[in-house]
Amino acid sequence: MPDTYLVWKFLHITGVVMLMGNITVTAIWKFFADRDGRPAVLAFAQKLITYTDWSMTVWGVVLTMAGGYGMAIAGQFDLFSGWLLWAQICFIAAGLIWMGLIVPIQIRSARLARDFGGGPVPESYKALSRKWIFWGLISTVPLVAALWLMIARPG
Image (tube, rainbow, N blue to C red; front, side, top):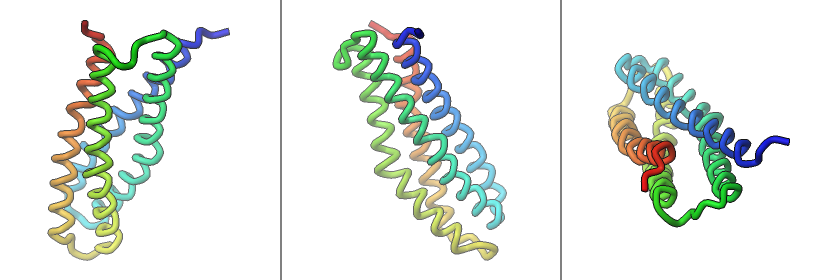
């Protein structure tokens, strides 16, 4: 029978890879789609952002959290002290930025992208894209910090 801690660790690392990989790749191809500027390319990119967030980012978060808490319980770690507490704070901070700012921007952007189809891209879409990239980069900082804390386990 496999070691329960290692199963949780596998799920946790799989979730981190899915989450970090998807947010990184999504930001890159969204940036290049925005630079391209063609309405069909932007609409397709926006559609893929929604799809990959539901299929990769959400599941990455679920696996990261389930695996992390499973490891903490199996390994009898104190969830409320040291690096583990700070990693959770970083993860929550990123989540608040996502849920409070990025997801609403994404929803509005997706609606605009469906509406402009083959016509001109409105300035409101371009402004939302700039905000999405800005807040996406900001939200990545606490995620990278949480990743470092997970690996280094300082203190």
